[in-house]
Each structure stands twice: as C-alpha cells, then as structure tokens.
Length: 569
Image 1 (cartoon, one colour):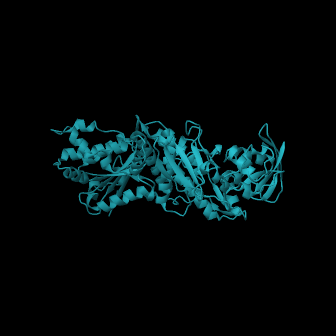
Image 2 (spheres, helix red, strand yellow):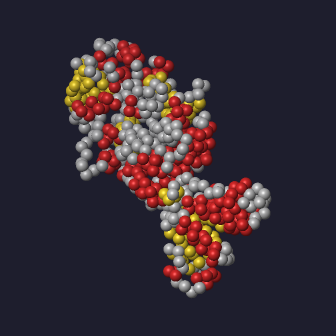
Image 3 (tube, rainbow, N blue to C red):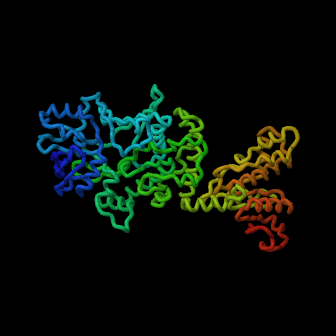
C-alpha cells in the first residue's frame, strides 16, 4: 500500500492510500480546505467514484521518462493511474515521498513525447459500439495551442464525427449566446471521418462535470436531480437565468438532433482553477451519438417510436427532459437547417442516400414536434399513443377538423382562409402544401388519353407524419396548377383532384380548410359525407355574408351534419 497526496495544482486536497494489486482506493482523508473534487465535499466513496471515472491521458513510458528527468523516480507503483492527470482539470496525485510539483507534470510537458499526441481514455465518454475497437479513437494533439482533440470515426460510415460537425453548423445558424464547441471534419484516405476541436480548458480554466456537481451534496427527496443541479450552480455564482437558458437550449437542440448521450459527464460548468469560482456553463460538446448514427433501419420512426427511445441524462426520456424547459422559444425554429439541407449534407459526407433520407425524415418529425412544443403543446408519449389509438380507423388516420368556407366571390374569403389557417398554426398545427399531398401530374398520368376517374381515385395513399397538420385546398389553385403545367383544365379533373386531396389529407391525419366555390347543396353534402367517412372529429361550415341564404333562414343546429356553423358579416 502506497500513500499519495491528492493535489489541485500545488494545493493538497487530502491524502489517500491505493492498493496496487486490486486497483482500489483504500483510504481518503480530506483536508477540508475546499480544494478536493465534488466542490470540496469529498469522502472515500466519492473519491473512489472519481478514481473510476478518471481519464488516463498518457502511457506509462511517457510519464516515466518525464518523471525521470526530475530525478524523483523511486518506485513504479504510482504510475498505475499515470498520476491521475486529465486535460479537463488540474487535479493529480503525488506520491508522498516524491518532491514533485504541478509544473513538473502538467500537460504542456507531454508535447515532447510521442509527437505530442496524448491518448484520450475516459471510458464514460463514448458508446461501447462506436468502433470495432470498442470506442471512438480519440487523442489530444499538443502541437497546437490550445491543444486540439482529434476523433477518428470509421464505423457507421463515420457518422459520429459527421454529427459533431453538423451540430456545430446547427448551433452557428442559431446565432445565440449559448456557448458551444466548434468541430471541423475531414474525410480520410482510408474512408474514415476525422473531426477536430480546440480544448476549452487550460491550466487556468477547468471543467467540472454535472455529475460531480449533483454528487457534491446530499439531495433532498423533494428535489429532483435536475433542479439540484440548477440550484447548486446558482449557489456557486452562476445566475439562474444563465444556467436555465443554457439547459433549455441544450435540451431543445439535443431533442431536435436526437442526441441520446447527454449523460452527466458530457456537460457541466467552467471553473477558475486559481480562485475555485464558477465562471459559467461549459460549452456544448460531444454530440456524436445523435442523428440515429447506429441505426440501420430504412423506415423512419413514428412519433411514438421516437419518444420511446431511451436517452442518458437526468431522465431516461426526452419527454421528461422537455418538461424541464422554461423558455420554449430559446431556439429559433426558422433558423434550423431544413430537412432537405440535412439530407444534402449527410450525402455529401459519404453516407448512403437511404441513410441520409432516413435521418432527414426523422429530423423532419422532430422539427414538427418542436413546433408544437413551442406553440404550447405538451410532448407526451402517453398522449401520442392515445392519439394513435384514437386515429387508427381501418389502418388509416382520422383528422381533427374539416372546415369549409362557402362563398361564390373572393371578397373576404381569402382573408378568412388565411385567418383560420393561422389560428390553427398558433394552436401548434403545421401547415403543409396540398400540392404535395397529391400533385396534379399524378392525375395526368392516370388519365393520359381520356379522364379516368377510377384510376385517379385509386391513387389515394396515406402520407406518413401528417397528423396534427393543416392544409388549404382550393379549386382555383388547382386550375392554376394545371395551367402552369401547360394543360387545359376541365371541371371533372379539378373536382376529382380536390376530392383526392381532401381524402389524402384527412386519412393521413391532416385537417383541411376547403375553399368551396361550388354552391350546389348536393356538392356541400358530398364533401360533408366525405369528411364523415374519414371520421373527422369536428366539421365546420363558415358562410360568407353573400351566401347566408343557403341556410334558408334555418338555425345552425338545423343544418344537419355540421358540428359548427359560423356566419360571417
């Protein structure tokens, strides 16, 4: 059994005894001067956990050569953990009988060995399936100032490294004050992906992990781990607004990119290594385990499947993490990369098109869920499962609303159409283009010589991920679309495209706002029956001033089939 001092730079935190055979810390006695890990609240159990998680930054040979130059080498026993050095803080261990100080062993000294490359060995930092060797290859390149962390990724098309660069791109587009690490990447000659970033720690600034913060004191049963983290940061000098904004931003961006690995060692705060005072939240880093990097499925996830995926953080589900967000608008929805851009970026990074397409579609669903969340909706797995059960009708989905605006003129109708659509968007619905539900070209192909109504009707297909969205359908728009394609529109084809778009939308779960110019009662009843067949929850008829006569003086309750009739003056 050899005795050591646990050091923070040249300050003694406490003394410990280490069993060389078992690799276990047997004793730890803290000096109670506030220098030890866990914010100065360290006992033998905490120091054992700290020891287990500790990085091993250098080989025995390298540190042995370095110590020999000081003339202090007496036994090899203290090399077991390579003095417990780390790139992210200034803690280390010193054998009780070795006259070493921090300047003898600090990291800048390693630049003289092994071409300045220091292995990165923190087992808590990477997924066990990340590479054939069981981990992503990482090392520090000390030839740069500040040092550069290099990650080499080969498995999963090198996507973990690509994800780091993509996360950087996403954060840059957000243009917020939230700090983040900037990664840049390179495709290697042997078809791997290499990404690099500069160190955000130094001899003066160190990283204190969220794990160390929450484990620094006993947490009351009435306080969650998350809330305890916020409170401890505030107690140590970070403003509540600053730490809450950071966490809100990180949770929401992690949600969008589906980062499943935001464990408590992957974020934290920066601390002044001399004053021991908190500086602020550490920049966002290590986003490699995101964007479905390990998935080989070719079918996008449903909303339920996305929310069922386990994550590693304060909670095991994204739903519970989202519930902690206070400022839902801390991220700008319109500044996220478009799904089309995401697909393009991943294809250009040598991912197969099917993989990039799957990533893009899942990302699209996440953006929709973010939109709903930012407009007041609670994201809940239970709610999504219930909605799925309620909406499944003969294997298809029913929609929330079918709204018909009835008027023979355009006066006031266009404004009402926009207003009703905006009202639904404010409620959390996403607007989708009716032309994407069923392009007019499909009707041309189904009727190449003569108009073939049955052939067009058979074209109806359920579109995935359209639930809780809204679309505007107008015969006038369809006339214009047909003309733009160089074809001569006819009434039968236009009406059929209107009907197919209505059915496609409703059966896919999308609400419909129909601009109805056909004033015949039979046509109105036809669309109402169509909505009933699709099991729409609410059917509304909005009648403009010029057409109040269509009700023939009857009250709304006497117009059968409609859940709501609104007369507009």
